[in-house]
Length: 354
Image 1 (cartoon, helix red, strand yellow):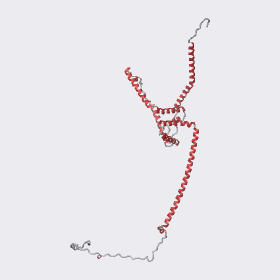
Image 2 (tube, helix red, strand yellow; image 1 turned 180 degrees about the vertical axis):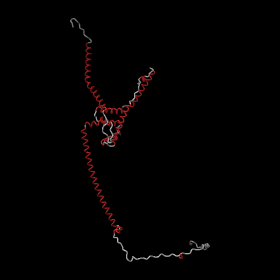
Image 3 (tube, helix red, strand yellow; image 1 turned 120 degrees about the horizontal axis):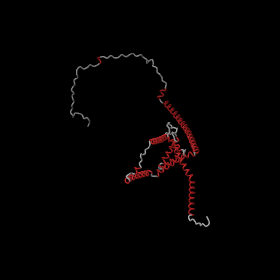
């Protein structure tokens, strides 16, 4: 500044400095916030993209397994899908499906979804009707009809066929698994299904249906995860239980064989004793019976004596003559009159003595 010039204080200087300070602070804060939240946002975007990839891979990479049932029938697409879903091979997709099922159960329990559906329907239809009627009255043209598309939407035939094919695969999956469990194709699965059905039978008395569904879904999703993370410990415990069961079964088998052998010996002994007593009794009865004595005695054959053997001469038959018979009457017989001996009543003797 040259000599002689007069400097006046700037009344807005402090205000300008304050604005510059605030702007600098805001920029610094925004930079700090962006620096803090940028990794979080990037992580969220990365996880979302990976989840979408896993869901897409789970949907399109599952195929029909090469294994078959005990009857030789091929398995379905849902066998591979369910196995990959519950085995946590793609954890993000499995976690999303688990959370979705849990959320649907709670929503069906606590939210009036059906009432909301009907409410949305009547509100949408009422607004459409009011807009159409008001437009025709005011503008001589309906507002709803003006938004009408040139062609109504229809479901393509390919989509319908794909949906029906998926539905057929799902029904076949349920029927095959039910029959495989029912006819004990895998005994472990049959025992597990029996345990689940028996437990559900008792729990349904105390729990509502949504609670039982929540427990079943939780076990179905988290059971395989617990087994995968603790495979060695669980397998060791299963082997110990299996060995214990086999040892108990062998002990019971040996005990049963021993008891059977002992019972068989007793039965044979009793049968032998009773057979001997029966034979002794039958022999005693035969020895004391007179008919048996007669039959057992020696048979003496008597020879005919010389005096009995006599030659007998034949006896001549008598001659029948006519004089041996009476002569037949030559005249007819004449009946003689019968005279009744009538006596007076007085002279008759009484039948009974007085």
